[in-house]
Amino acid sequence: MLHKVEHGSIFPREDGKIIDEHFGALHSKHDGFSLAHMLAPAAWREPAQVADFDEVVIVVRGVLAIEAEGEHLEVAPGETCLIERGTRVTYSNASQDQECEYWSLCMPAFRPERTKMDS
Image 1 (tube, rainbow, N blue to C red):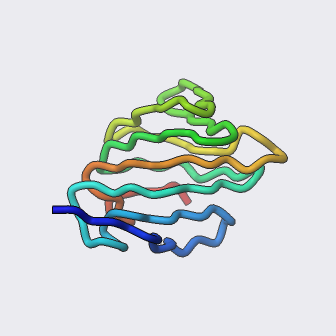
Image 2 (image 1 turned 120 degrees about the vertical axis):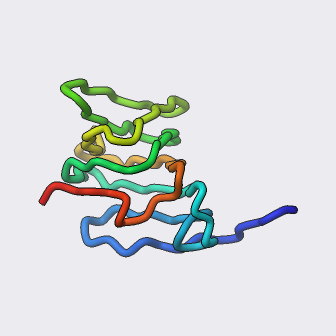
């Protein structure tokens, strides 16, 4: 069986980041995985979080900074990174003046109740 997605659903955010989910709990009602196209504005930074899912990020443009367990990585275009469930992680755009574009694959699917964010 095939499932084509012509456009996703936008998760509402107040920090300028755009999460355009193509598959997952919001758009396609899939719970086993989610796939979202992400656009992080320049200088964007999220609070630290711990997720109850594994997440793979694939950077298309810009540089995504990832901090976890005292380690700091920068993921550039064409590179990927796996963040295992239960890892306390902080995501940010490494650039102060350019947008960062990436894809996120979460297994099982991203759901707000599966993520505990710091205040």
